[in-house]
Image 1: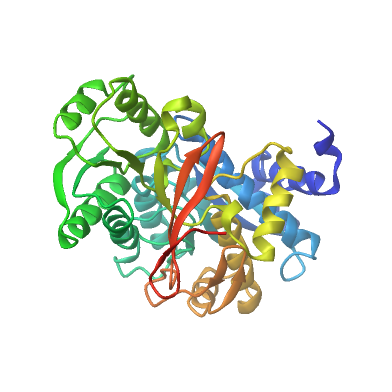
Image 2: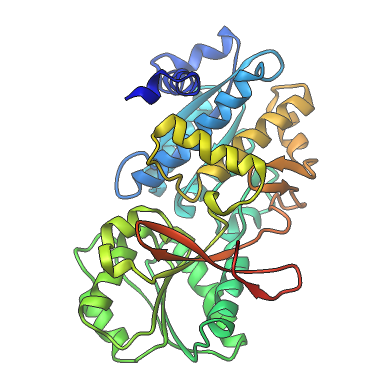
Length: 393
């Protein structure tokens, strides 16, 4: 409870109160600059969504503590997109109506796609922190940006890891039929085949079921070296439980970046031990001073035992780079902010230097493999500058 009385927590509370206050649509007239934050704040993925909002609040608090932008405070306007296409479209329209000048957020690619369609129509920049489906920046819409990599980068990384580190000869790839999950699965399967690894299973499960024992049995009968699940953490926890409880002949259970939420370990319990996930570097494994300060500030604001989720720091950078673009443009006009974001090069973010290419993607996005060990993930392997596998320090 004492954390609420710290100066940082007070700033966070001020930002979050403004973000959800009734009548927030009129706050622009009161001298604030509004940035929208769409995220799943209810439902199965609310843990990830609230963590994204936490990252946004930390960024806004830091910016406002330094005087804001163009002499005004940053105000966050959050909307619950429920990780659902219809709800996402409604959330995006609400943000437009509330007068945001840019948007930073998103989680599920299946929600980000309809959101982007709305923001494109409104001419609003959308800087995504977690939505990795390539289609988002392949439409040619100038409003799309992201501080994280793409599934056609993670898929080849995962395949290379499975072959060269795990020495896998056969892999079962399981997705959940969502935009993100199908995209990562497709890119991983293609990369595995190029690596000469046999894909013995490539099919989908339905999210939200109580267990996946039948699917696990079908996969186990094929005796793959690796089961790679490309969906989200709630289902990943159940699949890990089923594989372990049924004592299936599977050497490794793996997941993509959508599984790396700390909730996975709490939900799966002992079945999570040894599970490996491919992901953009988690906040606690980034070595820069800004990343270390982010983790420390996160704990100050949200509790000493709080573990920042995988996308909190990428959302922190999404809000920060958006504010930087507003300052560089010396304008809050939507088209000026979009133009300024396209000029971003070498921005010193908490996740490292950020440069947007012509599509709005982050140049030189990197990935790592983490392993569930105890109550949290530990760094496992990454590629060094020479393309060699190393154990992160």
